[in-house]
Length: 614
Picture 1 (cartoon, one colour):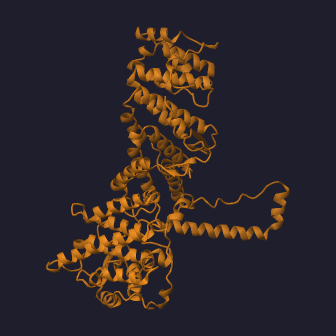
Picture 2: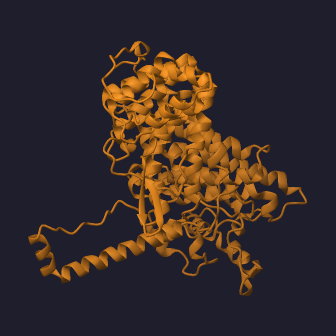
Picture 3: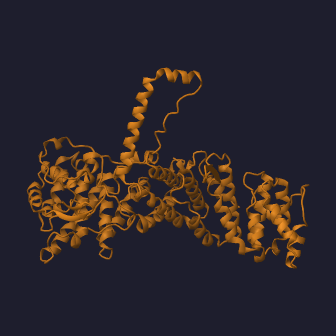
């Protein structure tokens, strides 16, 4: 039934058994101080075995006296709104939605209560399982009515927003309040995020705030699952599966017996992550990337205006949440994925990063993080043409030269990360980009490519008194030195040997006493677009991601490492890894393919339904 005319719904009353007086009379008695029938009414409404006919009759009576339901009847309204209308017949649903429209239009004081009722149903119903003396409570993942229930919840929310235009102002705090704890099951988180994104479709004014809420929770998960932990658990899981496969081969007779009895062994889910936090994050990333895809692409055609609007929203979330979060590994790929739809978006993102990097009004710590994003994006985005990479280098390298010029006559012209952090981060971004993109620059026309690399005057940057090779990650400087040696651009090894001799160890206190170690990552840098580890959502990232390919000439590089990098600091061009840091969420340190089909039992958000007129 359409929403229009719902307030005029006039279903004939059904024959049911009831106790007490009619609702109108009960309210009149309550006003006079007689609470007997009032309490009896609440008791009947909370009956777990209440029938469809009883619900319909009660709701019809409440609709006739909705103007009398003032603030004094708050408990009664709460009981009525908690009636089990989801999963009931269509007649019950229609009557309930009619009551809801009458209530919010006549008594806006109950707006928050109605919104909370709807949002409460954005996750599967809770079930209680008793193990011994302990009650375990979580979502009911086997409810086959979830798709219909979610559709009805969104229908109810649209009705409310139609009758109360200010709904969005009251809805957002409720969405934040009801967001499930991040340690809840993947299914619960998946359903809630899925429904939040559906709200963003028909209440676009809330989309940016909804994306902020979702991404903030995902960042909490992301920084709680370090790359090293994910890789270790995946390796252990693969080893375990391999051992089980070998064991199964040794017991063919047992398998034949199981087959005869109709019991086939259950194969392991190869798409699931072994790390529990990574599994939840993978689920949410799949939903978010699916939403981005469904919003931007309609039947495979890019909707440019919608894509631009979504880009602006995501860029705002990036500036506010993603950039200041140190060592997040996966969430930032939502921006990476969106930029892959059109080159103009990628160039706009790079332009935004460039403006942040060179802006002296930005905190140094954020400028360093921006340089990491810029270098990593240039290196890893397969959809970026070499012309765009060269254009960015034409911005970064002259800026480095100007910075060196400004320091030549300065008393602070010496190697100091605290004073020159953005400069070193920009140097590392240039080195990292050249490590990945040098072949694309020189291939096709070696002469022009080499002339371009020579025009960058990298020797001046490497040889300057600020000594960037001493600060940048050893894995990057070693690779950069090998590449520049091959093309005879600059010979870095002499400087690296001198830096190695002059590097003094840093003494730090630990539980077992004092230990001595060299700080090989003074920038505390990380690469935001290092290899993506999540399996299901990674299927969307893999085609647009530039993996590291070992150059043939690396065999000719000097056998002796100038500065050996620890396993925690090597990039994937050495061992498919990145600088590892056991971190907690915080500020950066200074020194729907429609998987919006998820939940899996559901279809993509019915955009046609959500956009049809009320």
